[in-house]
Structures are given as C-alpha cells and as structure tokens.
Image (tube, rainbow, N blue to C red):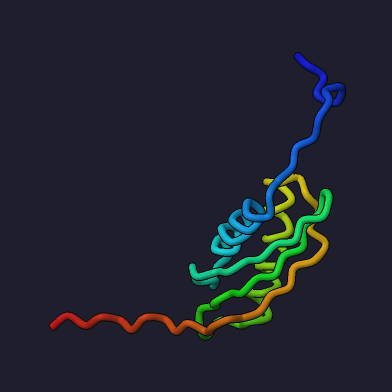
Length: 104
C-alpha cells in the first residue's frame, strides 16, 4: 500500500464543481424544490456558498433553510474536502403544492 502523505502535488477543485455539488446537495433536503442556484467562491481549501432556494409552500422557511445550510456544509465538505465556513441563503420562491387531480 502506498503512503499518500508522501506523494507530491496538490488537488484543486474548480468553483464550477463546488457549485454543482452544492446545488445537488440542496435538492436532497426535504422542502427544497429543484431550481436551486448556487455561486461559490473558492479560496485555498475553503469555499463560501451563496444559494437561491425555491421552497415548497407552506413549509416553515426557517426550518428548511437551517436544515439546508447544515446539509450543504456537511455534503460539500464530505465530497470536496474543503471547509465551508459560510453559506448565505436567499429564498427565491415559495412553490405551492400542485393541486390534486380529480378523476371524473
């Protein structure tokens, strides 16, 4: 087995990759609709995220955003190895449940 600590070189992760990972992770949270928009700023081994979330109505906004922030930090750190010290969230829309279809 090779000791990876002794190998030279670095791995860099592009901001676009971090954006895609974070956008996908946000949709894993209950109450977040699919049209998530993320911007990321990567500096060294940390990433700051700005997220626009559409949230399903009538779910509590504070609860969904809190869960989403924690999930984004955990998943982004897990998948990239970067620290995520800040996640700014803007609620872009409150999306109502689709009406039930009636069969005649």
